[in-house]
Image (cartoon, rainbow, N blue to C red; front, side, top):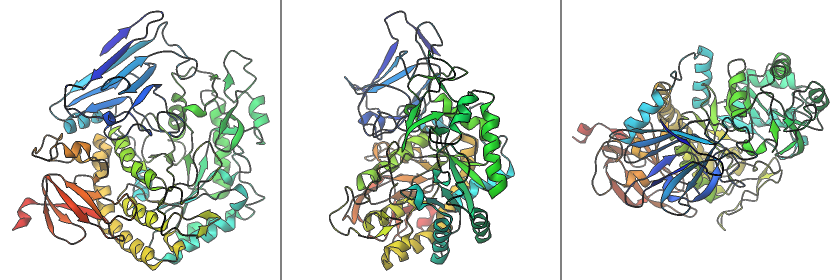
Length: 593
C-alpha cells in the first residue's frame, strides 16, 4: 500500500502519465466526458462521488479501481477523500486527496491522507479476475435458492417498466391493460412488472394510494395468475407533502443539517420533489420504521419485490448530518442496500459504489431516446462490468422517459433522424422513432436484462413485430443460455456477463494474439461479448446498414448468414439490414474442416 501524509494547505496528489507509453485505462466510472477507454476523455478535478451525468462530472455507479492495458491496476482506499482528473493538463490520470464541505466534510484524520494499492500482472484479464476473485467472499456465498431463482428470472424474463408521465395516469387499470397487451403479443415472457414511485400518493408515504388503487389486491392477484411478478419502486426520500413527514420529524428519523438543531431535518430536492427529507439509515429507529411500512405493503398486496431508487450523492442535503458519520454521501446508499438486501426481496438499485449481493442488479443511468444516448449504453455497460458489477440492468428499449432531477419528459424524437419519425404515442408519451427503437431492441437482446416501457406492438408496424419475434427467439435459444452459463464465473470470479473484447481469450490485453488488429480490442467501444462466446456489433447510427466489425482471434460463425469467419481482423462495410443485428458465435477451430 502507498500512503501519502500531507499537512495544512497541501493536498496529497499523484499522477500516472501515459504520454510516452502506448497504454489505455479502464474503470472508475462514466460521464459525458469520459468514455471507453478512460484515457480518451477529459475531466477537471472533481470529487469521486456519484452524480447525474447531465449535471455532474461522474455517473451513477463508481468503483475506486482503475486498470490499464499493460497489466497494472490502482485500487484507492475508500476512506481517501478522493478527487480525480483525466487529461486535465497532460496525458495523465491524477488522484488528489482533499476535504471539503460536502463530498468529504466528515474528516477522518486531521489532514487529508491518500492510500492506494498498485497491482501488476502479465495481462489484464488475469489481473482483473484475480482482483475481483479475492474479495472477502465470493458472490455465491450466502446465496439462497430463492435468490438464485430471482437472479435467473431477471436474466430469462423481461422487466416491464410501467412509468407514466404523471401520477394520475397510473391506476390499477393501467397496469392490468399493460399486462394484457404483453400477453396478447404471444411471444414475450411475463416477467417482472416494475411500477414507479407513483404507487404512492406522495413519495415517502410507503403506502398504496387507495384513491387510485381501490382494487390493487385484485389486480396483483390477476397479475400473479397471469404469471407476472410485481415490484414497487422505493426511495429513502420523504416529501414534505407526505403524511409521514411530520411523524419522521417528530421521531427524528430524518437526516439533519450539520451544525444545527438535530430536531430540524435537512431538506433536498429529488426528481419532481421540490422539497424532501432523507431517512437516516444510520439511526437504529429508522430501519424498523421502514421495515414495518414495507412489510405492511407486502402483507396487504402480496408484492413480490422492491427496486431501490436511491438517487446519487448530489441528491443528499448539502450539509447532511447522520447519526453516525459517513465517509462520504455515497456511503449512505451502501448502508441502505446492506441493511435491506437480506430482509427484503430487492431486484435492483439505481446507484452504487460497492457491489450489492445477488440477486440485486445495478442499473445503468437513464438514457434519452436519442441515437447519441444509445451510443453511450455499451461503453457504460462495459465500464460498470470492469468495475466489478457483473449483474447490470440497462434502461428501457428505446430510451428512458425522463432524466433524474426533472419532471420534464423528453420527446422521443429529440436528436433523432429527420425521417421515419412516428407520431404515435403510448400512455401520452411519444414513442421512440421507429428505426431507433428497432436498433435499440437489437442491442438490448444481448444484454443481461431486457427492460421494456414501450411494447413493439404499439408501432402498428409489421416489420417491428416480426423482428421482435425473431429477436425473442434468439434471446431464448442462444443468449439466455449463455448468460446463465457465465453467471457462474460472475458469482465465483466477479467477471462481467457482458465483456469488452479485450477480456475475451485470444484478444489483445488478454494475453493473446497480436497482429495488425492487436490494439483494436482495446479501443472498440461499440461492440461487446456475451461471456467469451458471442460477439455483438449493433448498428448505432440512423439510416445506416453497414459498419466496421472487429472479431477477436478464433473462429466465429456469422449470425446473419451462417458463414464461418476468421478472427483477429476487421471486416469492413459489413452489411446489416435494418431488421437484423450483427452477432458472431465462437466455434471450435477444427470446425473449419
